[in-house]
Amino acid sequence: MAPTIGLFSMNMHACADPGNAVRIAQRAERVGYDSLWAADHVALPRPRTEDSPLDPGDRVLDPVVSLTYLAGCTERIRLGTGCVVLPQRNPVVLAKQLASVDVLSGGRLLFGASVGYLEPELNAVGVPMAGRGARADEYIQAISALWYEEKPAFHGEFADFDGVDAHPRPVQRPVPLVVGGHSAAAHRRAVTYGDEWFGYMVSLRGAVEQLSSLRDISARLGRQREPLRISISPSRPLDPNSVRRYADLGADRLVVVPPAHLTIDELEEFVEAHAPRRLGATERADAAE
Image (cartoon, rainbow, N blue to C red; front, top):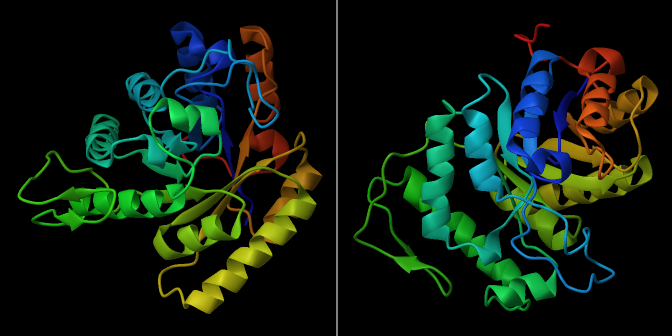
């Protein structure tokens, strides 16, 4: 089956402007995209480091706030954090924020989560690089407890609560958990906790390696749940042939990333050029011009 198409960068560059974000979100919804994705960087290294994806002056809105805003100006398209850096977020507060997005959007949230990799960013919020994976694992479990347990409680090294509750709960039960990351640890996290894996800027060759690792780890851990859905953000521009090749590898969704610093008119042209019908991808069933 052909993959669906999602759109990245909905809270940055041209879409850091609210009017532009609405224009692009509504256009993407009309032409059949299945999802909008917002990145997470609370702070960027200054001066820019080699591993930083952005310049320190680049505008990046908070993903939860951005998706809440986009929920109010769209009707059907899904809204994904791509990916929220879990270790730098308080899990109790984040659970409330994300549940609110799901409620306000009528059940359209995709909870994308990762561990992060920019040490200056993590340091800025008081989170050490060491142990961030274990912290993320606990935060996933803590958020799940708050969303799905009748009497939420969690006792861990990094999160600890009992005798509390938080309503409203999300509309979706469960909210799809999309785990991002290219490492074996990220693959283990996706297999253990996730409904979906997200690979950012992955080539076709890279996809072969990543999906092989995910299959091996899933078999080793004996995953009993539904097979992981696969979302990939391709490293190169898409065409119908590359869409078919990603689909043959097992991709369920391709999340296109516009080049940085496009004008709003150029960005709208990009959205139209990558519309599902132009790429031979699956359109949302209710899409209409």
